[in-house]
Length: 115
Image (cartoon, rainbow, N blue to C red; front, side):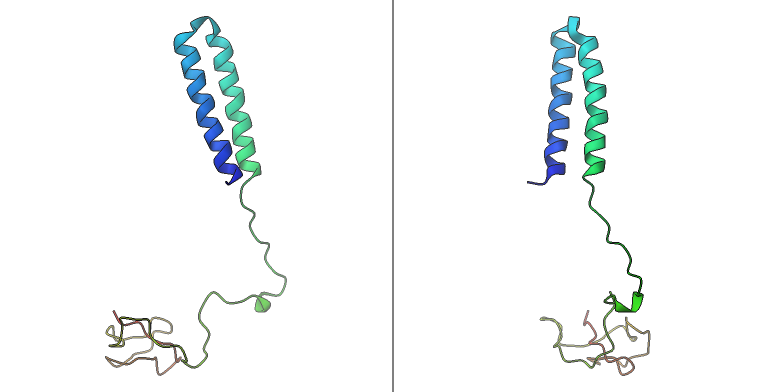
């Protein structure tokens, strides 16, 4: 189980226990309140320290893989259930005009989804 989930569940349990103490044992209300405040600060610090790390950017941006599809020729078939080709009239990758029913963009070569 993820450590952040465990800390979050522990935070909820401490809040529940503090409210029970505040309601059932009013003579310990001050201690419960201060413990609750202290625990919430510690819980937030723990959650912040366990946050997912963000990858650092590379010095050479051309060495990173592009999040966009390549300009390679179309070799993959269309997704199943879409055999009619493009119906929107332009390529969603390069905005070139595409004739209705085309399965690939004539300008960039990407396979076109058939909506």
